[in-house]
Length: 268
View 1 (spheres, rainbow, N blue to C red):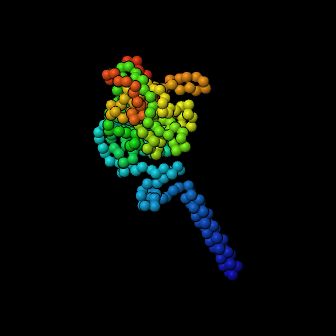
View 2 (view 1 turned 120 degrees about the vertical axis):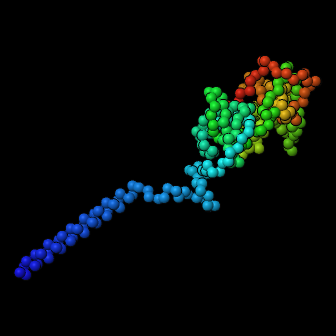
View 3 (view 1 turned 45 degrees about the horizontal axis):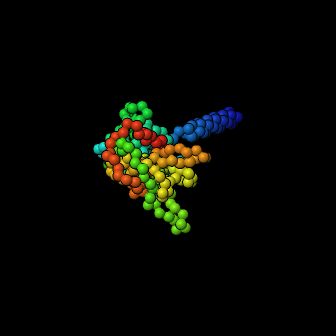
């Protein structure tokens, strides 16, 4: 009888150990499976130090939340050819198309830094929507309307002055009539002259030809000759009206048929 009880007790102990081992293996299996899933609340957005629900990407660029934008309306004009971005982020390299200089666009919404626009793609002619920085837009059509002269007028550059060491200042001719030097994002992006190379700059006393002015009267479109590696070439660009002194009287302002086209490269 004692041997039978001992045998039953031994069987119960083996069965108990087996069940415990099975449960432990099951727990380990479940725990391992949990590592493959993210059970965090998907509505719990990351926040910045100010409690904002906007995160930053790997470039330190602040994500733009849709709630930041408010509907707007009205026409605007492009100050320089620009690749319109797919998203309202500085780090966004994806573009939806190119808006040409002077192109009329529709404002759709804005957050004070970025504006969503509807525009005609200058490469395909189709209407698209995308984002540009506010600073690339102007509400003044006269700023991007070029009034050309029927006949070029001889002029000289004057009024730049000299530096404290007596050397003359040089003028960086621009591809479009826009003072982008005040821009943090597009500083000097539309300067025709290579800032580090004097052969691409003009200075007081240099002869130029005045080809026209913007309708707001602030910018002059000129042609000038530059010498690069011993070869003379003619370039075209804009500079402030303050520095172009016309020799003689100007002819009536008319639209010519044979004036070179302004076609700068789009900025990113």
